[in-house]
Image 1 (tube, rainbow, N blue to C red):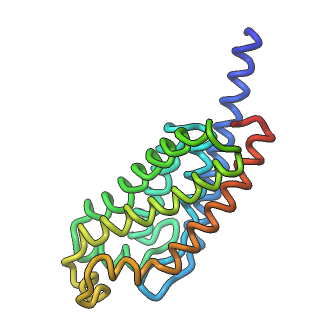
Image 2: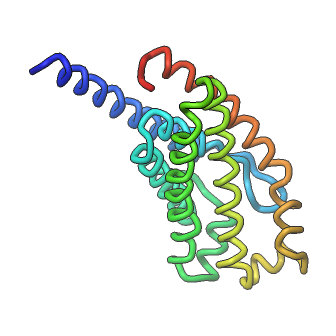
Length: 204
C-alpha cells in the first residue's frame, strides 16, 4: 500500500469514527430537549449535522441530517425520546406528513448546510467558517421545520389551537423567537469551537 493510500485509509477511519461519535451525541441530545410553551422545544441536534458537513462535506451533511431526521421522526412514537407535538400530530394526520416534516426536512437541511460550508470555507478562517455553518444549520432547521409544520398540519385541530387565528408569520415569530435565537447562538459558538479542534487534528 502506498503512502497516499495509507493516508487516505487513516483519514477515512477517522471520519467514520467521527460519524459514530456524532451519532451517539445526537441520540443523547435527542433525549435532552428543553420544552417551550408553544409546544416546541430547544434542541441542539443540528450541531452534529453542521460538524459532519464541515468534516465530510455533502455526504456528511446528508448522512447526519438523516440521523437527525430519523430520531425526530421516531420521537413521534416515543422512541429515542418523546415529542408531545409529534405524538399529537401523528394521531391527527397521516404518518407520511410527519415523515416529510421531520425526516425529509433534516436531510435537506444537511445538504444545504454542507453547500453553505463549501461556499465559505475558502474565504474565511476556521472559526468564522464554523460559526457560519453552525448558525446556518440552526436557522435552516427552524425555517424548514416550521414551514412544513404549518404547510402540512396547519388545518389540524392541534395546530389551529396553537395558532389561535394568527397568521403564519405571527405564529412563527411568537413560537420560535426565543428558542430559535438560543439555538442559533449556541450552534454558532459550539460549531466554531469544534471546527477549530478538527482543524488542529487535521481532519478538515
